[in-house]
Image 1 (cartoon, protein in one colour):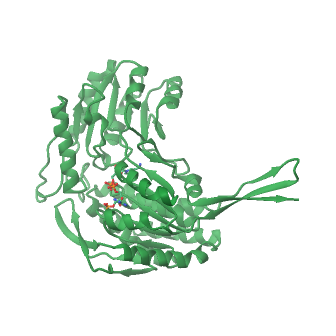
Image 2 (spheres, rainbow, N blue to C red):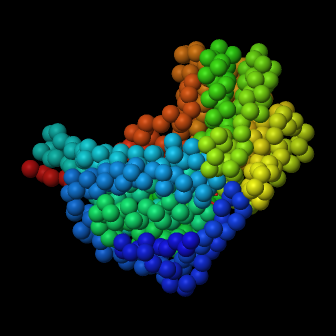
Image 3 (cartoon, rainbow, N blue to C red):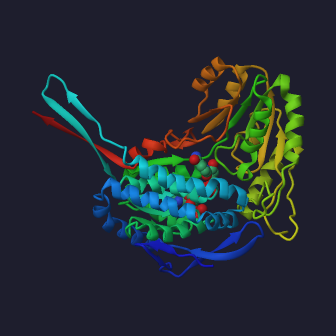
Length: 479
Ligand code: NDP
């Protein structure tokens, strides 16, 4: 099946008529093609967005909200079709796409459709000078949204929904590896009555299509989620043009387990925070630190539980671990397992490819637990982004804090303890943007989302996202 660009409300082939193969990770076969869009396609998308901007930015909040909520309802009505498409394109279990990815994409539109009706400007009375200031929060114009392959529609809509709610028009590019649900979204937008040109979706490679978006002098803001290296490249290209930037990048998140935690809840959640979506979530807790007094018990129980996870075809309901997203990514993750071995780390379980009957060319890997001797080894410092976690014991709160922070990333952290004072102390000192205490991935869309250090700059979510997608302009009136 060939997918097309969605520009000015219509579906179009790329101008060059060049295409890129799209693979099904569950069987390793090509099952469609996507446009290999060029600069000229991005320019057409920009022109459509620019022409619509004067009208969309003046559309009432009530009308914008109504359309966004309608998109959300249509996604919910098409849950099964979208979940199947997402699972096939990405390799994730259908159960996960049905329970998490597509419902969350729908929530993104509903949330920002409602949030925009509550978003307001500030005013400041300058006492003693007979003056009043008020702040206009105006949409930026045409903005670029670029998203990765791990949570395709979930992260694509997490950017698009606040961008259009705030009155911008968008040129967006999903990952070339997982373009399908973004393609299907076009029809839903038309059905919901989104005016043509508000959202334009251009498919293609990061190095050409993505590059054309970030280089475009009149696309004034870029919201990007993806790898740290790509983020650094985007920052370099965008900085001389003074574009507004939001960069949500990689992570190497600590999962810190104290002996006083609720053990069973911790164990169950730790299996999830390690291996959900084949470990391909930027928030996965890939470095697990366990207080020494329960280390051996945890090691035994964790290995036992993880061995029970079923690696299988994504469309089967009983599958816990589906396929990795691509052959190239599978090779990268396998290479990290070899690096761990060469560093004298111990593979406690997993470590090998899995041959799933009938789908022998799919990209399946066993969930893998690696015991490391030091937190400074490469497998513990570099982002693997696959079904691989490390474990090691710690003795004191000070020791584990040091190890948690001794990494270039700073996205999220999880702490398991029932000591309230400890949670307060540690939450202040861990260098990340998001902390979960006694839980993982519990999300409230109003909260600020993002990382520090090499995990990015800026925050998404709630009013933070609406602030990013608007420019504040102060007006001072003397009376
Ligand atoms: P990449 O950085 O490779 O790609 C992300 C997106 O950027 C893709 O759409 C890609 O296109 C595009 N891109 C690549 N090069 C350029 C360029 N020169 N200009 C503009 N766009 C470009 O990341 P992955 O897709 O491999 O995603 C995995 C990464 O994303 C991991 O590091 C993960 O931690 C991070 N991530 C971060 C999250 C967060 O919220 N902090 C959440 C989820 C993931 P194409 O795919 O076509 O090359």
